[in-house]
Length: 301
Image 1 (tube, rainbow, N blue to C red):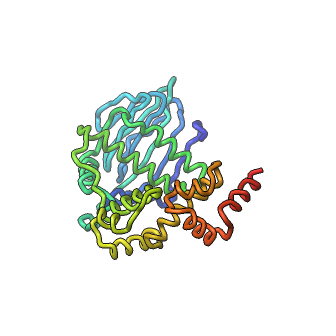
Image 2 (tube, rainbow, N blue to C red):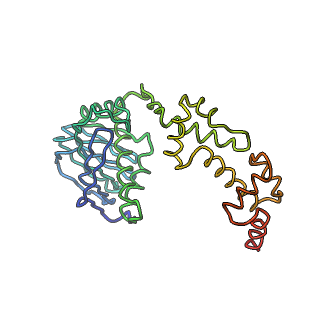
Image 3 (cartoon, rainbow, N blue to C red):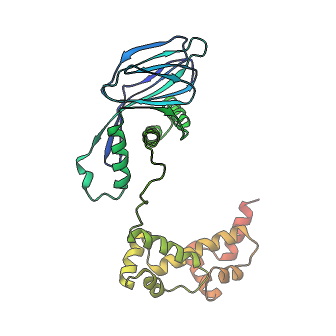
């Protein structure tokens, strides 16, 4: 990014949800350091976040004056008159994020992707803060820099990253405005569906032991029939198919990457005897374990 050139990004539709808040980014701009640059008294119909990464100047807000120095972070809300003048010797540069927000109608619906207490708190802070002036305590500068990098480079996923970075900047602003330094809520607990998925994944990490569907079903608190449905849903396999698949994948890695014999590998991955391993392996790979190991050795030369 050329820090001596003005950048204005205002003709693209950048919206995203922050919980039940719909955020609309009206404009994003960067002002380079220009000695004595003056923005006369003006206001917006939206919120404007200002971040000063370098230089000095003077801010006037409703008959009050504030010194601007590197790291100054301030908000001017709807209808707040403000003017700004840059120092002649150490002119300031400035990042600005202009936004508005609206509470979605489905605020009180049963939605599991956010914590309503958190969004309630952020909403309250934003609604009651029309002006705030202070210092950045949450590394917001790096977020602005990343945001402008995304605008300039336009690499795959840049729109999603811009939404995410803008959300983080707004959250950092709400943190700055708030006197509360520690949240009074927790992240929502896992749903039983997700807990079971994690438990099943962990169970198959014990592939070298004697695993039984009935034991796993009991750990999950479901019937074996329910377990079968979960297995099909998560893996598109039965319990037995998933167990064999897991053991075979590990066996393939061991044949390719170690000096262990096929019989040692069969034992290490949990097959009760070598003949069971040999049969399962040849049915899947169409070659014997020893032939597969030779093929892998030749390919690595």
